[in-house]
Length: 65
Image (tube, rainbow, N blue to C red; front, side):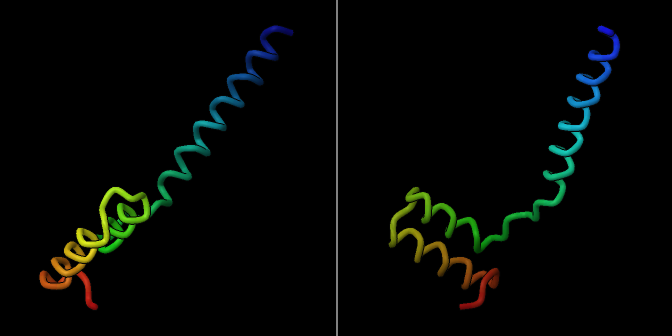
C-alpha cells in the first residue's frame, strides 16, 4: 500500500514539473521596444528616461515611430 501511494506521489510531482517546464518554453523573447515600456510601467524609469530610450531605439533602427 505504501508503495502504491509513493508511486502516485512521484507521478504527480513528475507531471507538475513537466507541465511547468512546457509552459516556460512557450514564452517569446522580449523585444527591444518592450523593455523600456515594462520598466516604465513598473516605475523603474521616469517619463524623460522612457522617451530618451525610445528615441535611441528609433535612431538605431530597432523601432519605427
